[in-house]
Length: 528
Image (tube, rainbow, N blue to C red; front, side, top):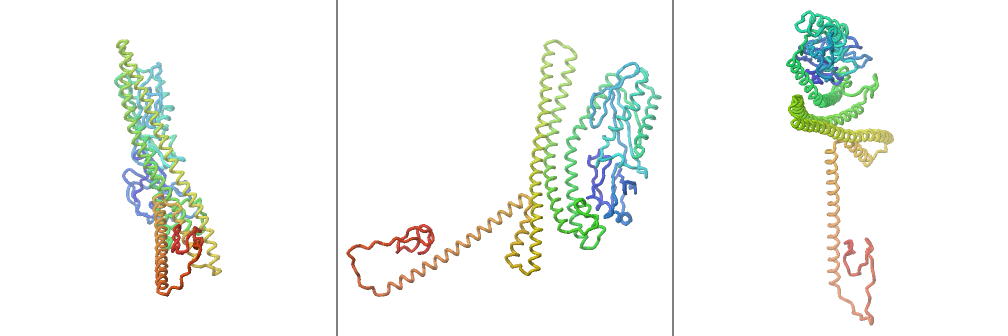
């Protein structure tokens, strides 16, 4: 399979494969794209170097499958095999960027030197290739990061001392000087990066001795700095997309683990297990509980939701930053034009106007920077809210897991004692169902709440129907009794000297006062 390991896009030089990617690397067909290589490490030592092409990894898997589940450290590093270019600018700017190194250099006669040193680096796909030495503690490294280190080395070890030994008028066309610079630069790189296999291919100097040459170099440095800024905005998005891809891969590995367990393929199952969950949570050598794997899978699902939310936020942030970059470049262009006009000293009034324009442009740049900080604060707040919400769900999952473990123990004891009734089993199943929804997404929780509400509404409606039917039966019975009483002969009528007062009665259901001849309570409707 082909694995997208380029964390920094085309600028990625090398990256360590995550353990989630090991099942796809070792147990299936490997495809290394054009200008790609891979190094397999065992306990920190190079085991094999793979170059561009397609590999059927049956033989490789047979050789390495015993490494997994044993106390062996396995690592795979993918790297690019094409050369890449670095830059050191002399006398152009005072600050470095991600793509350029800027330094000040003086010649022997004290002249300020303006120049660009451009060099090309590469790492060959030979048994000596060892890109892990360049990575160090990083999971991935970009070409411009390596060029930054190499550029500082070249300036301090080669460019600065050599330029300080010649006069300005001895530089242009001095092929002997360039040859010495290239030779010493190649030696310096080889000595510093011998263990990694990194080598310097070529080096050239672009001089800025005239005003036109200096202006061209300044534009070139500014373009590289703008590219670096644009890439910085895209970097966070690339990292979040990488995290999302790895989380999805771990989820697939966890699901595949259970299938391989059922098939009895223990080595592949272990490989997928290590590619699904953190082994710090498990102990090597003991049987893995499927329920424990399921719990880890639920955690991975929460991670996927978090990364999906972060990707959406980073897309919005990158788009807004790109718009601000365009505004900033335009403001800087106008500012540069105004500064150029000010240098011409065209008159006091015009200088004052230009100065006002310059102040306005500088104010706009400050507003852009403030807006950028505001955007970052807003998106960081939104991300924090998302992470807090997911953390609450994760804690709820842990609590539910503990509670269900307790219920499981009680049920086991009850089963062994023969004391389980249908009601007890129903309660247990309902709690198990609630566990499934304990860490569900907001949409699933809302749907379940609506379903429960609908269920209670139906039960209430059914109870009302039953009460109505009972009331109708009582009314019918009372009507039949009255008709039967009407058919009987009436007794003698006795007239009292004092009119009889109806006795006060109370409803047996709600306690309201009712009269003897009433058929139903007017307050609650209970049949009397």
